Amino acid sequence: MRLHKSGLMLIAAIVTGFAISRFEHLINPYYYQVLIYIGINIILASSLNLINGFAGQFSLGHAGFMAVGAYTSAVVTSQLHFASSSMLNTAAFSLALLLGGIVAAIFGLLVGIPSLRLKGDYLAITTLGFGEIIRVIVQNLDFLGGARGFTGIPKLTNFVWVFSTVAIVILLVSNLINSTYGKSFLAVRDDELAAETIGISSTRVKVIAFVTGAFFAGVAGALYAHFVTYINPAQFSFLKSFEIVVMVIIGGMGSIFGVILSAILLTILPEMLRSVAQYRMVVYSLLLIVIMITRPRGLFVRTRTAKQSVALKTLR
Amino acid sequence: MSQLSESMLEVTSLEVKYGAIAALRGISLSVKTGQIVTMIGANGAGKSTLLRAISGLIRVCSGNISLGDADITNLPPHRIVGFGVSHAPEGRMIFANLTVRENLEMGAYLRRDSDAVAGDLDRVFLLFPRLKERINQQGGTLSGGEQQMLAVGRAMMARPKLLLLDEPSLGIGPILVKAIFQTIVEINRELGMTILLVEQNAHLALKIAHYGYVLETGNIILEGPSSEIACNELVRKAYLSE
Image (cartoon, rainbow over all chains, first blue to last red; front, side, top):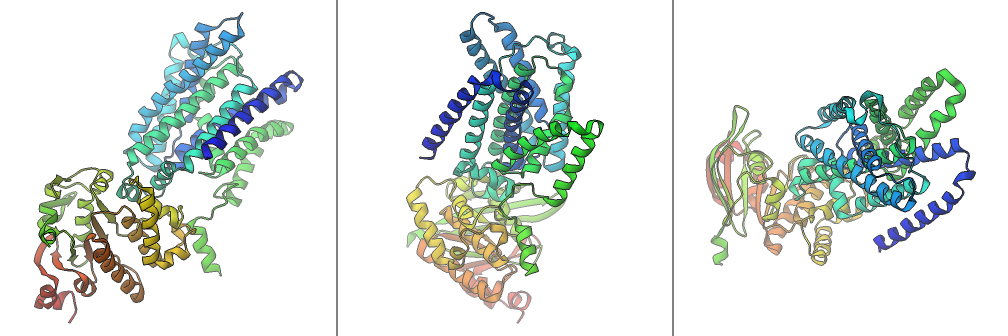
């Protein structure tokens, strides 16, 4: 029943996307660009939420997966680009997105394996290191353009591609989390040993979280590459990873809705702050600090945590 | 009645070390099918270590643990659950951000017989009415006693052949302790679950168990039917404070 409903929602989302894309040329190009970035950031934040928020594995390497997807797909379309036929381009782009996701997922598997032995801060440092390794390797690969970057990527990403992917990610994550199988993610996050004692393989949960999360980060990277048409390693530095982590934390770790809203908010906010010119990033950072002080569990967390409830009890 | 004499769990010369420190120094014990067996002993005697070794949460240095015909020594914990062993660990270890219902449902994670699971859920609520009142509350918001009930209930939901209970009386008021022990007897009698109960509260544990072991600094110093152990001079002095 639930799956049936999700299917309908997915179709509705894609149809709406197509309808809006008919009027693409009417939208101010600047707003259009911000809209696309919002979509890509929702994909990135939701997929990281699966790893950080649901499975409780603190990863700081999401930009690394994104880079893998971006470069893989760029290589695919640069080999398969057909200027004349839009049908063939659609096929090539589908293949590029898929391959970008798959190769990123393979890297997710590679990072997932150390996560079986590492916890908390140690895992964060390891994944941070992983992201940087990817960046440095790409920087030194000549056929990918090295530090000069990869140019001439066909502009294939549009509203429909981005928001269809957004719909798929959101439906997948929310269906997963409401299933018994998805609850095993939450169980591992809450108490890994206890999860093992009821028959959950924590190894499997972590690896699946990393692989799925990395897949969608890869797809997001591919969408990004085919929108900006030029990528270079600096775009995928650890700053990008932090940006995604901040979206997840501000939204509320493990809150699907919250993370979507915070991805939207944190994409728009820096744009709106363009008016304060050179103080833009200062104001942005200050706002983040204020949010963290006033809503330490994230903006949109509705469920009360154990600690807060105990505090409330003692207050009464 | 022949089933009663069959051994469900067989532990032979089990050695467990934490770094250089030996927690269990080659102990052997056996748990017969359908019985409640208790392991009593002071803090640091190695009681929890024993249960953790059986359920696979820590590695065994040497020795052997077998369940029926199957050797389960050093298998990963989630596989041992599949053999029908369920562990309600010390410190409760419930899922703080899942509701009471979700915690219990997760206990049946490996089961595919959803009708029977629903029945077992009702049974847990019958045994622990308090949990039913708290059904939609998050696990972390329960009181200590309620969390203990939840841990026992969750372990039961796997419908194990062997239930390992680690200090169910720890940090709980006397009235609740009595209720929990009563429930343990019911689980054993009515559901036919075999139970290995680790306890500091020797008095209560020996009252409900069929057979008992006394563990002291990693060695078993005494074993026998629990009525005999309860009469033992040494035990009376050391553990029953008489």
